[in-house]
Length: 115
Image 1 (tube, rainbow, N blue to C red):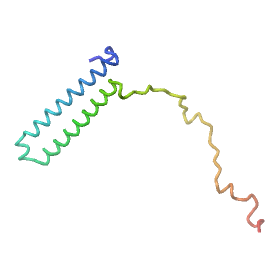
Image 2 (cartoon, rainbow, N blue to C red; image 1 turned 30 degrees about the horizontal axis):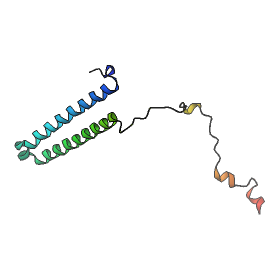
Image 3 (spheres, rainbow, N blue to C red; image 1 turned 135 degrees about the vertical axis):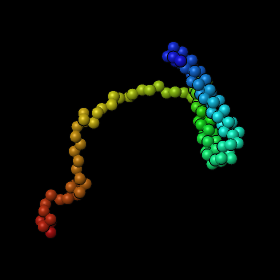
Image 4 (cartoon, rainbow, N blue to C red; image 1 turned 120 degrees about the vertical axis):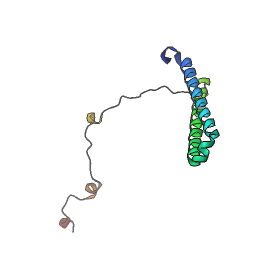
């Protein structure tokens, strides 16, 4: 699907449809895993791990769908990307002169001259 021809609203709808389709597919897999008696008898830990994984995937897909729906409805705004100043490479910056804090506190006279 070429979303460049759909416009912003069409792209959102296409993305939502894709996410909903993926959510249905993961839910179908989860149902199959839950009803697989052979897997339950053979390796219950693996079945449990698969159930947890599919539940996590369903949660992520559900949150992605909710976020896109909120953006589409205007409840969440997408800030435009703006660059306030051009980025400067470190090589273009002048060298930093470093002065040790110890050098600032040390008197210029030799230690023997202070006594």
